[in-house]
Structure formats: C-alpha cells, structure tokens
Image (cartoon, rainbow, N blue to C red):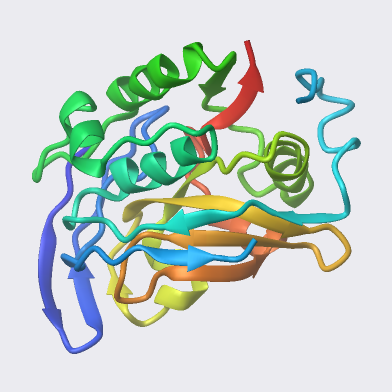
Length: 229
C-alpha cells in the first residue's frame, strides 16, 4: 500500500488516495501526533458462524490504557500495542513497527503485521485472522466485536477508511485513506461500538453506531479477529 500525505492547514488535512491490499489493515494517518497515553474506563470456545456473539453480555467495555500513535504512520503498531495489552502483553509501538517492517512511505502491510501479532499470541493460546464478512454488515460486526470484547475480554484491531469516520468529516481529505483503530466496548441494545482511535487530532475514545462503523470498514480485511487456537 502506498499513500501520499499532504500538508495540514488548520484542522483540515489533505491526503492522497490509498491503494488497498487484501489483509492489509490501515497503516497511515495524515498528521504526526504527540504520544500521550490516556486511561479508558472500563475463556470461551471459538464461536461458529451461528453462535458468534450469542454468549456475550448485552454490553461490556474492556479496561485498557489508550495510546496515541508516535508517528504519522504508526496507527497499526499503536492499535496492535493496545490490543496486545488486553492479553497481558506489553510491547512498544516502536518494537512492533520494527518487526512489522513499518515505513514512512508504505506504512504497515498486513502480510507482515498479522504474523507478528500471532507470534505474541501463540503462547497465550490465541490467534488473529482477517475476516471480510463485516464490511457493510452491522450484525456481523457486532457479533464479532461482542465475541472478542464481551466473551474474551480482548480488544481487536479494526481496519477502516479514515476520512469516512464521523469525527473526521471535513477534517481529512482524500479517498480510501487507510487507518487502524481498536474496538474495546459495545452496547447491543443501543447498537453501538466504542472504539479508540490512535490519531491524536481527532482520535481518542468514540462511540459509534455499528451500522455506521460497518460502512467504513476496509473490505479486503475488516479487522484482526481474535479466536482460540
């Protein structure tokens, strides 16, 4: 994946088109934030297609410490670091970026990121895969998020189009701008999902309708879905 980052003027950032590659979650955001961790409030069998989410509570939030990405192209390392922390794995963004072969020009490619995450999870008895069924499908997204967050008490990485997120409307210009965030909470009755966006200018904690979030997922790989090995 390649991207061109333009110049920020006020709150508006111009970003070039991003070429999406299957299994490659978002890798870049268009401004360099200052890292500033913030606190966020607060084992099951692998679910089948018919049982995903059925065993999860109506709502739940995982307790974790939020992170803002350390560079303008560290959204995958930042999101992965937060996700891994819910397994009790402490690893820095810079360490993950090095192992994931993250670069300023190309960001992070899924073919490198996925194996790195799985290396950390192997001893924990978990693995991540990159499904595509939640793109535009709010029910599938809620089922997957509620399984990971509500049943497993873990926070999965989501691959989204940055400029299409509600909190970036009018602030990020471009088409198919790849980005990574994490889901750490949900409410089935309200049909909402709570996410943490590591891009500091507009990021942090946001609660969004599942139907809205499903529409901005990257189709070639929606998320790093967590399951038991």
